[in-house]
Amino acid sequence: MAIKPARRTPKEYAARRAQLMKRIGADGVAIVPSAREVIRSRDTHYKFRQDSDFSYLTGFPEPDALAVLAPGRKVKGRKAEYVLFVRERNPEREIWDGRRAGPAGAMRDYGADQAFTIDAFEHELKGLLAGRQHLHYTLGEHPHWDARITACVREIREVSRRGAAAPVDFVALEATLHEMRLRKSAAELSLMRTACEITAQAHCIAMRTARPGLYEWQLGAEIHHHFARHDMEPGYGTIIGGGANACILHYVENSAELRDGDLVLIDAGGELQGYTADITRTFPVNGRFSAAQQAVYEVVLEANKQAIEELRPGNSSARPHDVATRVLTEGLVDLGLLKGKPAELIKAGRQRQFFMHGTGHWLGMDVHDVGRYKLDNKPRPFESGMVMTVEPGLYIAPGTQGVPEKYWGIGVRIEDDVAITAKGPEVLTGGVPKEVREIERLMSGA
Ligand code: GLY
Ligand code: MN
Ligand code: MN
Image (cartoon, rainbow, N blue to C red; front, side, top):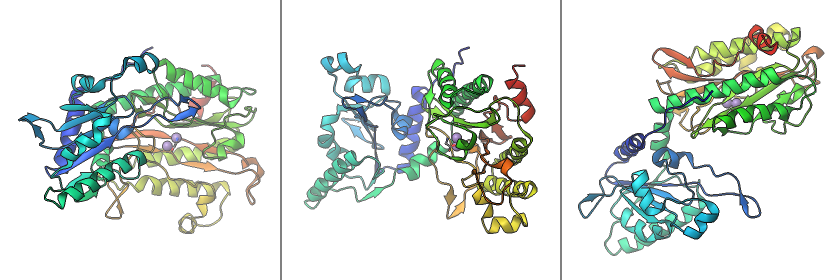
């Protein structure tokens, strides 16, 4: 079944650029570079992925490009606010490496008011920066461009001593752009719903496929095949951890055999048109939870559910973690893994032996998406349009002293993606079960 997500329109990109330009004001200018190709092996590259900031503002899919936004700029009376620098057309290279838009295509198909080849960058940039006070640019992310841009600014400063004005300060672009990306538009939410729906289907396929004797990577193959069928690819390194491998948080070898009686933890998310899902499910390789596995699992599930309820506009964004930490710590005491009063254990950080990561992160174009977590040094309140993961877990390393052996090597994480809405938390990842009975039913083939 093909699921057709909403396509983002040129109008949406134009609206984003207009919003950014309004924020940076008439005396500002923003520079946003594309990603570059990265060598994988000698003369072959990793599959190109566009820089998320650049993609968000331009939709332009090629490497070696750069966008300049100069609010209010005009050339010969015509609007020239949005300038793209792109690779030159080159019929011979295009036979080998694929089509290029070139400057004409950048204007015709991507809405640039003006476009130049990337080699003209230094020459044109001086004019684009002249008279602007604030240069909004994220230093440190694109070393190649840092050098070229700072060299340009230095030259302008030299000229400015003779009368022309120079940009006086560098302003971190993320202060404006990343706040925009944090609040998702209707079109972005629609894409994320679809990414989550297809990713949930992929997790269901993995549950139905799992059995003792398969290798972790074979479950990965099922998941990635489903992504590929929907023109998606993994938004981050897929984690498939059977047994105690689930206790290694960033386990990506995915090389072990799945054993009868073990759980398997799968953390996989498909990226659709630049937006990724991020789902974790943990389930028994043989389709039936043991009593000890179920006991740990139910604690994590309760933490997941209670934390999700906190994702409401106006709530502090620290609430989900506080709630998850409380539920998990109470559960650890009930299971006999910790001794003492939960509040005191939390004060002493004792739960961190079993729950050593945060409960969630912003989600969007990047799996660990942009946007500040604190404002004025306090956890910021949630707002409608933000999307966050909720991913409590418990990880009991093999051989943990003071812990009954039946719990050794059990690692459980349950991760959902949730949109914050005026009507309450919208769980985007409900298409894959997380209740014990529902998982067992799905795995039994019913
Ligand atoms: N898959 C990365 C994470 O859950 O944060
Ligand atoms: Mn996550
Ligand atoms: Mn994850």
